Image (cartoon, rainbow, N blue to C red; front, side, top):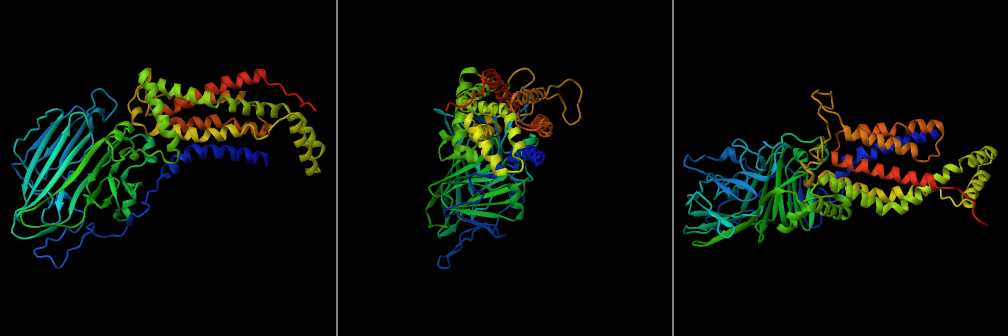
Length: 557
């Protein structure tokens, strides 16, 4: 039975670290909307509005999610207009008025000085481009939006790009982009003007075409969320792109923002003044199309309706998203441990503001947490040490009363009472630290601050596994995982120093734990391995101090 329990301990340890990545990422806010939001997973048209029979000259809404590239006829006169800000370079096409590129200046595609800036559009002519707008079938996607200037001039940090299209049926559409020099937020106003002599109806719809942010990802990416996300009725909704393979889904309610998110970046649209009431999506992991749709509107002759949006294609950096407003910071989802993770992230950035190195900041955060839990850890370690010293006495009791379990338990409990030993004292500190560990785990795994952040020596990316390249391609590994091996060695040393009540058979089994953990950590982000390594070193120091001081004495009568 004891050997069985030891095997079980190994398995549980393995499941906690590896299984957590798969299951806990989906915990926290539900992937389906809650409250009054309505969800439909059926194969149905994306349009939500119907055509009233009483209105004359009614234009019916478009029937379904449309692939813009299949319907757009490229105008040979259409130009690509480049917009330069301090944070990105954007390219807006006169063909459809769409966004063809959004290349960030502060984030690279790969970790290399010659790598280009991260392009958050990441699409092409065959897939189509985001921010197409339609107003039912009266204003289809892909109109030729002519810009009068073809350039954007910034005055006092703000520049506008106005584009006009003629729908050919009495409707004129004016798109106005507003760019800020120092913000990822881009304003988009779409004015639909009825120049005809009869009432017309249509539903405002703005589309996104989404492909994965990066063609090459880290091994941990398969455990992290990627797909349509939205904030509706005060709740975060995340739907994995692969789930859409079963059919389109539509969410309805009070939409604060909707878009497509990955681990580090987001493409979000904020509909202002009830410009959208439903969010629809379909596609696969490789190509996901989404649409924000509003209510059916009627335009009388000579009138117009303006639909206002805020567009944010940028990094999922909590401080920036919070400053942008609209609850966009909720797109950074730490799940159940959000209440601990967000202060931890703030603390990480606080230390970084002084030391200028996220590796050192991780070390300081680890030391701070260790100091916080030092008293209860100290008490738990002492309890385990005392338990080990009582082991010979417990063996004698079990041998003496092996045929009388009741008496054996009474004597064992009396032994605990005499020497003031709590058999659960060693477990409590670990239980209390589990939420903090998982919160820090989420922070180190998801924070864009660690993406391509160097530490020292061979560790030039704290979000990637550590590898020391020696000029020889090692099978499976590529390079030598020096930090991971050091972490495994520190865990082995800590285990050697930690008191245990296990019998020799159990002890041999538990000796494999450092080996198992080392293999599990091979592809973990080096920032997380660094945290675990430093935590092990501090635990070794603490255990050394306890081993030197602990003496078990009977309690005074």
